[in-house]
Structures are given as C-alpha cells and as structure tokens.
Length: 369
Ligand SMILES: [Zn+2]
Ligand SMILES: [Zn+2]
Image (cartoon, rainbow, N blue to C red; front, top):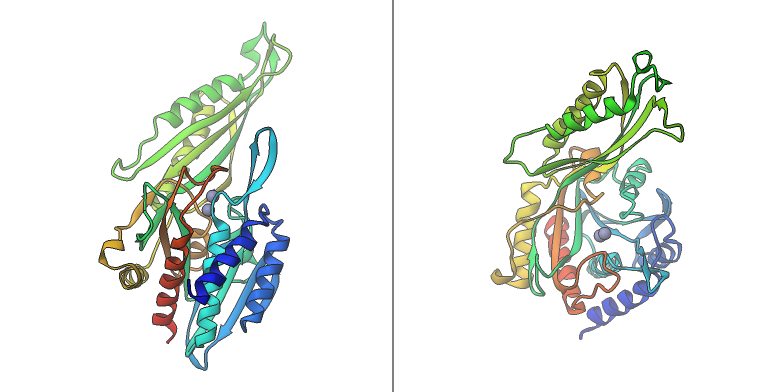
C-alpha cells in the first residue's frame, strides 16, 4: 500500500469507530473539519446543524465543484441492545472524499474552487435541505456524490457512472365528518365511510405504466372508545414512489384529489399534507460522461457498468432541485458489499475505497485543472 492508501484506510478506521446518528455527528464533523483544515482548506463548521463546508480556491477563475459526503450512521437493535453502526457506509464516503480532497490540495487547484460538503443526517432525509438553507450550495456549479453499492449492483473493480434513486414521499390526511349517536347516523357524517371511499380512489390511481411507480395506503385509523357513536375523524397515510420527478408530481396531485373526492362522496372533508420525502435523481449528461471517462481511466473498460436504477431514496437529489443550474453526478462504487446496506452486519471489500478516491480525483482534475 502506498502512503495515500494507508492514510485512507486509517481515516476509515477512525470514522468507523465513531458512528453517530443524524444531526449528532459531533465527533465526526469536528474530526473531519480539523483534518481538512490541515490539508489547506478554509473550513466552516455548524452548517445546517453538524455540517462542514471546506473551500480551496484556485488561482484562475473557473467553476465551483463540490464533493459531497454524508456523515451519519444508523441505530440498530442487536441481541436486544441498541447500537450505532455505519451500516450504510457513510464513514467510507467521508474517507474517500477527505482523501480525494487531501490529494487534490497537495497537487493544487489551478482554476475555480473545490468545495467539500460533509453533510449531516442523510438517513433522516433532511440534512441536505438544512445545508441548502444554510447557503452551502449558493455558488456551486457542479456537485458530485458517491455511495457504496451492494454486490448485486456492482462488484469490487466496478462502478456505475450514474445511480438513479427514485423519488419517494409520504402523504398524510385527516378526514373530518360529523359525529352523531349510533341510532341516528342520518344526522352525522361517518369519517370511516369517507376514508374507505378515499382508499378505493387511491387504489384506482394510474399513471403512465412505462414509468415505475407505486402508491399505497400505509395507515388508516378511526373510531374511538365509544362504539355506538358515528366517528367524525379518520387519519390515513400514503407511501408514494416514482422513478421520475414529473411522474411523482402527477402522483401527488392525483393522490390528493383521490382522498378529497373520496371523502366528499359522503359529505366529509379532507385535509391533505405531504409530510416528508425526497426527489428522484436527475443527472447532467456531461457529468455522466465525465464519470464514465473517470471510471474507464481508473478501472478499465471492464469496470465501467451501465447506469443503475435503484428504488431507494437519497436526499442528495434535493441539491439539484433547489438549484436548477446545478449539474449533478453520482457514482455507485462496487465493493463486494454483503449482506446489504442497513444491515448491522454489513461488510465490504475495503480495498475498493481507493478506486472511489481515484475516480473522484480524476473528475475534479478534469473540471478544475
Ligand atoms: Zn442508508
Ligand atoms: Zn447511505
């Protein structure tokens, strides 16, 4: 192992030993801030909570290129004990981005600006939004992300130049009717009847079937302790998924209409709110091409996979939605990862990390040298 790889592995060991959950990445962010400061970057901490922004300027004008790494771990119950584990590999993302930043700083940036974003709370799907609100991407032209992939998607020595996460949202609704005595239902409006009609209407939603999507009712609750009373409230929740953002917009509109119209069939009203979610991936063709070239350069033609579509969500895609001029790209790195992400027993081939470092360096050098 050369010096860079030895440092990369030591960085990974350090971060792996301090797993912290979203917005509580205090040790992780302080450690990363110190290291990247030592590498010559100007560092701002406490960005959007526990986020870190580090900036290195070139001598000539040029684009602002950001590398983003998420920092948070997950909580699992193992043998009856709650433990924090880096089971999504975010420690490896920080290790790769930090090492790439250190190498790039050593060589120096000729033009433009290299910006490093260590982002909190990806698993809570709100960390990216908090950094956006704090102004972290106000001047950014190009943003790159990277994530370890399960063995089914990519093996050690392989990488995909574009990982297409889907869009996923949660919608919640309260259906309001009119209570009445069970003997006099004609004086009330049964919220359960309204909710049942809403469920039927939601299940009849269709959008263009060539775009993968699902729309499911995941919660329905109504009625209280008094069983001879007409209930006047029902609450429901929906989990919506679509592989394209335009399709998701349509799905959200149709779902809201279905709930309101369903409730209206019995004279009830519905209040509908989108309470969480993330947009799907939208990458710039230039950046995908650049990623292809970088992967070919580092791993050879056999290491270059086609773009991968994955049903999972990533809050990285809020960056491109918040700043339409932003060109985004996202590498999926093969590393023989088993049995799967978010499994507390997740393990992977650490020798693959240097591939991620070299792919990122190659991309930034093309953009800023
Ligand atoms: Zn995850
Ligand atoms: Zn992750």
